[in-house]
Amino acid sequence: MADESRESLEDVRMEKLRQLAELGIDPWGHRFDGHRSIADLRASAPPNEPGADPIAGPTVRVAGRIMLRRGQGKVNFLQIGDWSGRLQVMVGQKQVGETGWKVAELLDLGDIIGVDGRLGYTRTGELTVFAESLTFLTKSLLPPPEKWHGLTDQEQRYRQRYVDLFSNEESLGVFLGRSKVIASFRRTMAEKGFAEVETPTMQSIAGGAAARPFITHHNALDIDLFLRIAPELYLKRLLVGGMERVFEIGRVYRNEGLSPRHNPEFTMFEAYQAYGDYHSMMDLTESLICGAIESIGGGYVRKWGEATIDFTPPWPRRTYAELLAEHAGIDPSDPSAVKARAEEAGVHTAGKDPDVVMSELFEAVVEDRLDGPIFVIDYPAAICPLTKRKTSNPAVAERFELYIRGIELANAYTELNDPHLQEELFRKQLAGQKEEDSMAKMDDDFVRALKHGMPPAGGLGIGIDRLCMVLLDRTTIRDVILFPLMRPGQQ
Image (tube, rainbow, N blue to C red; front, side, top):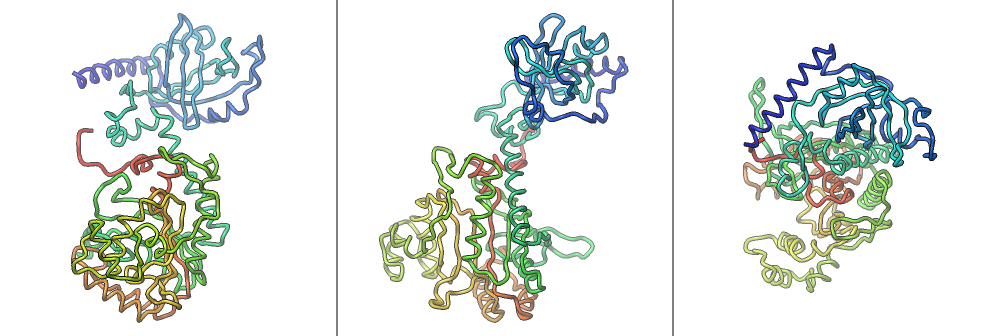
């Protein structure tokens, strides 16, 4: 019945489309210059002076989608919306003329119109454009949803994001906020002298992270290629080439499951700084995220779900070992104690490297207790094959991860630039990889690049989607990805 009702409503709108054409009006509109955003009109509106004549207000031009409509005889009140807000429009038969009134009577919710008129206030004090002429810009052939909120509609909101955006001001605000976060990142990097670059998203060897890649095929060359799981190894090649500060914001792909914190296609920020180290990257991370917070507003103390997070810098820096000792209640330097505690926490230890066991224990008993923002520094070297070791203790890698409420938002290293050690570590890592997983082949060209000499450097990766999820108070990553991957289903 719902589909039949929808079809009948579309038939009614098709009839109105025909009537508009009979009036000589193009129902698909045309260029509409000189209009101002609703937010701009609100910001520049004259004060509401009781008894003032609205006809004497400033002449304005505005465009938007009809969100609400109510009629009172020879007067219609519309609410129109653009991406900056919503505004009331009063359409009077006398003011818009015979043709304009015929157009007004053919309007539906969802139609897009342009309005020329005077900006003033109604008797109840609501800011309103008192229309003098209407310009029809686009006919909506499908009705907007009557109700768009609630769990029953959540999947539909993801599948039909275009409707979610114009129906839900909060959702639109999230994505405009995401745009501000990314623009802020670019400003901060430009201010710090970094060059933005682009590296291949189709690669002959998947590398730079431990993940299962998506595989595609290039017909002309008759070769399989991998959608990149990270831009890291190409960005490091640029350091070898003399580009001393580089960054990239782009899509990466990992053939893994869906969850509230992971989408197989996501946006990664990566940066590399010659002559820096992981401490340089901690400073950069603070600058980037604090700059993003300032760009979207709301202050450093922010709500996320039921929690409150204080982003006021500087953020604490704690070692991996001291956090493990604190939360697991063991001496991390004692492999037998680590193994026993891991088994107690439900971690399978048989046949695993002690550092891998320690890593899984950390995930099990520490991560969820890291409210943050907190930099966890100095990781076990065995689980960090691309990271430089500490000179004072080769068993420890100069790496950090930034945690907020148990979520890892950033990962950074003092980059390994010794080609012989890099090759050795690659081979050790490859020995444990399945053929279908990433890094199942040695990237000989990357090792060759290191042999030409890569300067000491710090490298940083930040997951943009997860960061936006936290900064914009969303509890699932799908709420900050415009078109998340969905299982095929009814549209």
